[in-house]
Each structure stands twice: as C-alpha cells, then as structure tokens.
Image 1 (spheres, rainbow, N blue to C red):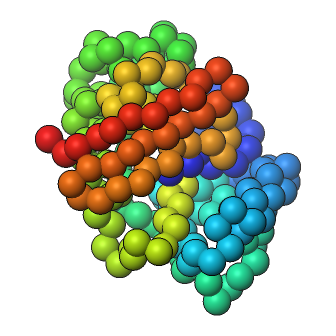
Image 2 (tube, rainbow, N blue to C red):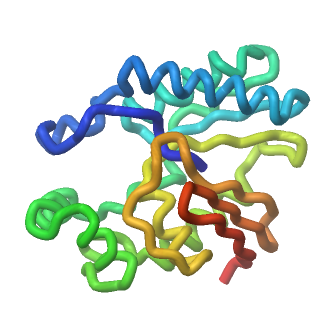
Length: 202
C-alpha cells in the first residue's frame, strides 16, 4: 500500500474539491518510474492495481501500470471501497487541521486524542484495513497487489502495528505487507526509519 505520487498542495484548494486534485507532470514521471522498478524487481508476477477514489490515486495507479508496461500481466481493480477514509466528519477534520496544523493533528489522532466522530480510532482502523488487505478477494499468492491511497491511510498501520508515530510519508512510499488472513509481516523504510513488525488479527 503506497501513497499517491506528487500533487500540488491542498491548502489552497477548497475542501469540496480535494478529490479532484491530480498528480503533477513530475508525479506522472515518478509513478511511471516506480512501475518500471517494480517490473525489474518482480518481472514474473502479475500486477494488480487498486486505488481510493481521489483523482490523484487513480492517476498514480495508471502511471504505474504504464511504467510496468506489461498490459497482459496487469489488472486494474478500480476504486477499492474497502479501503475507507479515516475521516468520519470532513468539516470537523478541516477545522482541526486549520486550528492545530497537520502534524499536531495527526500526532493527537494517533495517540487517541481526537474524537471518533471526527476520525476513526486509528488502532481499530489499522486492524480492519490489514484484515481486508491480507484476504483480498481474487488475489493469488503469486500476484503483486499495489493499493494507491494516502499517507493518512498508512500512518495508523505504522502506529498500531509498528509502534511508530509519523505524521507524513513521502509520495510513492508505503508499507509492504506479506501474509494471509492468519497473520502478516509489515515492512516500511524511509531515510530515517527501517521498520518491520508482525501482525495478527484481533
């Protein structure tokens, strides 16, 4: 599960238009390169691509598919409704973002200080998401499933499963999940962290 590619800042975009924000030309190039790297790493695996609803996630998945450049070996799963938003009340969320700033808001959420009528409980969200991803219908052991979402989708997994509170991750970075419905290994790396954790459903 990875964050979408490079997009413009959302701060100058009205809340109701956030879903329509595309990735930039630079973001397209970087996502295509990501696809080429995937092809070099796992040349024999079928690639399955799913994404959340915002335009930037769909565009990222399409660019990765082009970079992977094996149309007979890729499948577009489309929008994945099972990967639900962490935001329960967009109005409250936007107001808290404006009041606290992004990093403070995310730290407070991951430490359980934000009411669940605004953002889902991060621990329960993480467990529910991981359960869905490791038992995704139609995915074989030989397949590589790439889910394009947002940093805020991944942050509760890092906090809950890995015990690490990050407030953002880079574009096109994310977590690698290897496992099944009985348990999984989760890996994450960035310039400051190399994390590995075992997860089992609760």
